[in-house]
Image 1: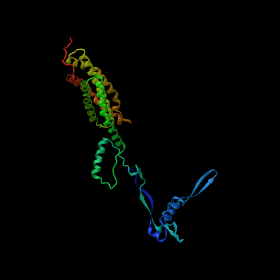
Image 2: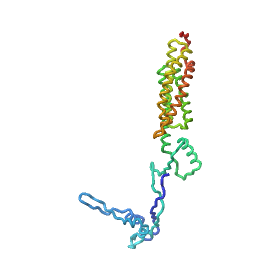
Image 3: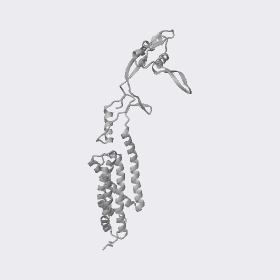
Image 4: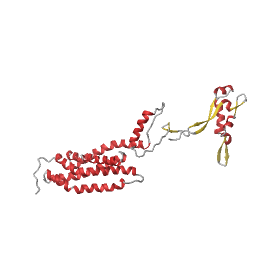
Length: 325
């Protein structure tokens, strides 16, 4: 917690009734205190072309001595010298060590380092606990910042980016195949990829964070690429006159190696991130876990489910005769 107490202050509280009896006012007392403790500019000293301000105040040994300050004399209008302690209450009190402000409002910072916990989940529990157990005085409130605030801002951006990404992928697939059917077929690989990413996070104990969300976006791009490779080849076989069943079987078998090689190379490239422990590992590891886990499931399910679903999405009706020998 930010240190806000423990600093000693000299408190001088003017007795208005006492100064009225001596014919003094508050400004007279303020002037004496300002000159004695803070110092007041009296004149300027010139040394060649340089000018220095000369201030008048008590020496250090007097300024730091409460008893000496109490004995300061204040001149009344009738010429009477009145000790400062006769017209003011002077004492040493404890006060704030520092006063911090943000947006013109005073604040106190409480810092927490979260370890082995999901930052978002931890803050959610903490917010619930403070709302139910902590009663703040009038005008006080909690504001959650730091890495949590950055995470919330990033997640808010991702809520916009992710739908736009999926829509952009669908649009590009539509331009590639000129068919809503085939674009929809390839988009179905996204859930297959997401399943693996979620399982990877669960098995490794990682949490859904901003790096993990970015990993899902990268994973979807790789999964769609594998789907495009497979569907394009099957469609080419169909356009050459091959029957639906034979085209699906041959497409799955002929494109097995390219799809597996693409996924394997991508996973091997992320293995160092998966086992990293140095600075930046908190960003690298969730991203690698999501991509590797998602590629495992999406690759296997793409080779099985996409050819199966292709039989439903095929738009070449009626089915041509099998031209293979």
